[in-house]
Amino acid sequence: MRLDALLAALRQQLGAAGYAALTAENVRIAVNQEFIDGEATELRSGDEVAFLPPVTGG
Image (cartoon, rainbow, N blue to C red; front, top):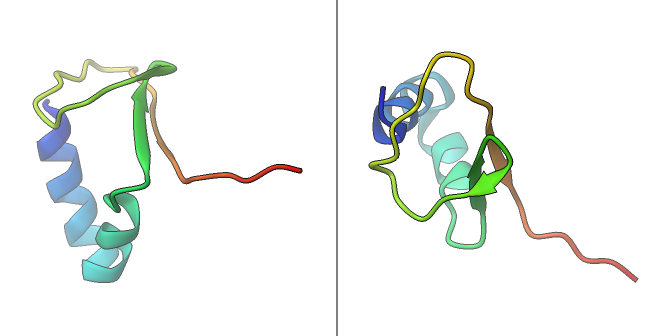
């Protein structure tokens, strides 16, 4: 499965607002704890996909 297929499935489950939150410009996506840059990334069974929002610290 490719990441774009996962995103399409999440869009169906979460609706437009949930999908927009996951794919916002400032949200980074990591697969197996490594940042990725494209939705064409191949996923394998057992891969961990994380959606990381911006975080501020102080």
